[in-house]
Amino acid sequence: MPAVVNEAECTGCKSCEETCPTSAIAVNEASIAKVKDEECIDCNACADACSSQAITMG
Ligand code: SF4
Ligand code: SF4
Image (cartoon, rainbow, N blue to C red):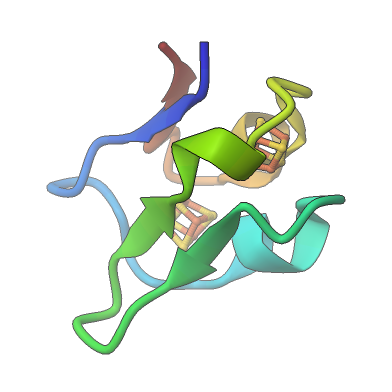
């Protein structure tokens, strides 16, 4: 299942965006990380990189 962002916990730090091997996650203009489900390969790298624990694997 693709990564899921808990938007209330996301600080917009971009660690996930910089870590994702497929560019499936990116911080939007509202400083919230958004996942393109169809591009996510479920690798967990973004969740590991998120110091706010804002990402879980759905
Ligand atoms: S690493 Fe976590 S806190 Fe930082 S932008 Fe991504 S989801 Fe948000
Ligand atoms: S689980 Fe992997 S592929 Fe999916 S958004 Fe996170 S880093 Fe990218």
